[in-house]
Amino acid sequence: MNAEKVAEDQLLFDVEKVHSMVVSMADAIKTYHASPDSLVIIGIQQKGVLVKESILRLLKQAWPSEEISTGELDIGMFRDDLGANPVPHIQPTSIPDHLDDMDVILVDDVLQSGRTTRAALDALRDFGRPRSVQLAVLFDRGQRRLPIQPDYVGQKLDIEDDQLIVVKSLEEDGGLQVYLALK
Image 1 (cartoon, helix red, strand yellow):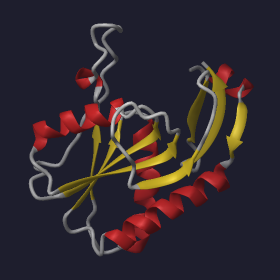
Image 2: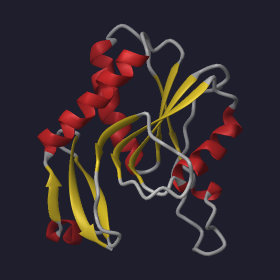
Image 3: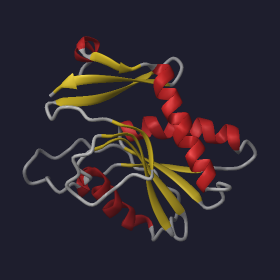
């Protein structure tokens, strides 16, 4: 989606509201994980990486003297619709050396059908066998097609099928805004 189109779309959540959602998610992660020792936070390319970075900034404030392992994961070649759609533009994948016995938190912007998360789980197998995998999403649209549920959610949204949630990064301060767009 290009910049002109985003400018025409309806602002759904401003930077402050999105920040408060991310704060809630980071607080829940800190409650569940006493320290980042065995934690790896992985953003699903592309917009999940933006949400991961926002969560990571807050976790680094909570654990200032601790190293937090992170990564980025492209799921393009693990999608279940490759035959029906053009080959996706592949983004970088950067995962710590091993995930064996680690607690992984997959981060994405929107959870809807669950297919992206399923593809991410398939992709993770190439990097080891985590002790656990949790899912953090900024928005849960419902409409699941697979039995996948998030562990950390910024907000649940009920919007029309012909609408999209567009997460936009504000480069100057790293804040996020969310727009509602038509498909």
